[in-house]
Image (tube, rainbow, N blue to C red; front, top):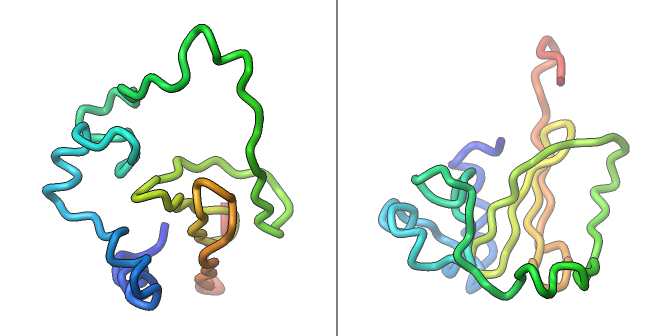
Length: 123
């Protein structure tokens, strides 16, 4: 996971995009007021991992199709819970990499790699 200071520095370099992506404590506490965003691991502090959005439902779920795919350029599998904030998807990948992607188009906004100390084996 990216250190908070690094994330803040990266957001600061994004200018106007960054300002909309800031997440305050109040915004996390009231995450249910903005169901289009997924601001914490479980979506909000309730931990239900459930969204009130209704665009996808039992009558149309069979028609879902991928809109885009994002290539990390790093071979291997990984699991992550992406965060979506103001239309930007943030997620981590293998070997201490982090990404910000336009959730509508799949366009990379930034990529980040933090080197690990030599004596710490990566999982």
